[in-house]
Image (tube, rainbow, N blue to C red; front, side, top):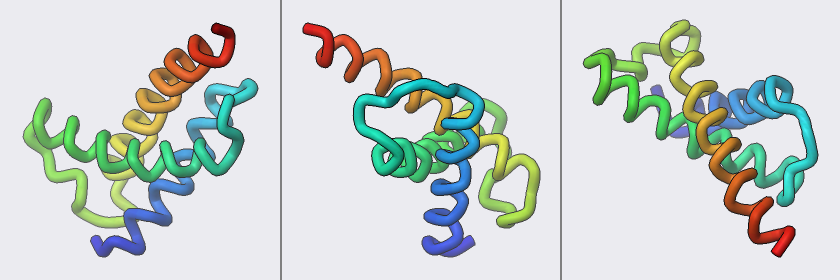
Length: 89
């Protein structure tokens, strides 16, 4: 899978993560989408490290999407915790 496909996958994973975890983000939709791209990379790394699977099988593979969405959710929760704490201080 090429870099353009990973970017598209990350943007969509970020949007899905935002849908699954609604609420106000300190950075807005742009930060959420960037977290989606980074989450896709994180999810792929975690899937490979923990389960020994290759999440880069293809754009339409279910494991690719699940790992990207889970990675995006993790980063979104961490970002909200860190940015929310800094915002209220």
